[in-house]
Image (cartoon, rainbow, N blue to C red; front, side, top):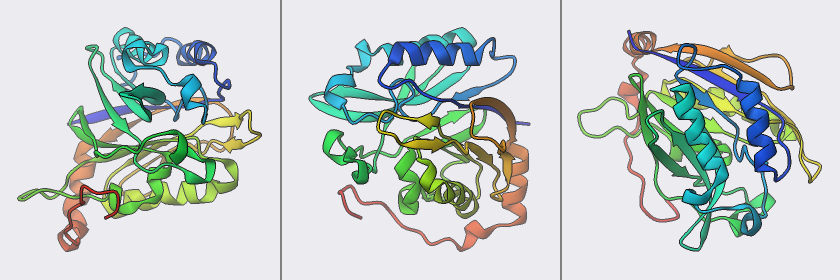
Length: 271
């Protein structure tokens, strides 16, 4: 039986202070290691908060202290550790989700949908590639915050002869408290329509712009029902196990995928 032990890390973040945030997160994670989890999920821009100061805070991948810290944590704890950071590459700035593996390798996803209401589209470049990673028998589609509002980008799009493209969806976020209701509903909706678990990790606290975050980090199953949903808006760390056998059994018992509309995504900005 394939099982994926998934750890959600909800935390407050120190504004534009990577060293303090990495230190805080390391303390919060404590002795968590491969004997307890396969995957540790941190919030969006876990090292800085949702900063629009990309020119000042972004670092090249190979010189990024936050990326190096992710790699160190993955190797030390012998599990995947993931979260997004601000990086600069070839003169462009990206809100980049880094999937750090315990063997020292990594996979990256650049946020596709940039939150224009905060001016993110003026400070960061748009990503163009959907990224699916594999862990413990689960194919996982990566996404960041505002991506969650766009179902076409996240919709199952299996290839010829396939029934499913991925088996879980992961979304890291800095999703403000005034919009907590859409966050919760969209996590559940993406699970239901794609017949897969959804992992959503958000932050708590207040940032330097006075924006408050209510957390609401959740892990929901393939029916949209909560597996992790602590009734609090404070820091927490919690682990739950996803079963591939249970997922496959539900997809067989309730084969809504047989009636799905088939489509392809274009390579342009609009589709």
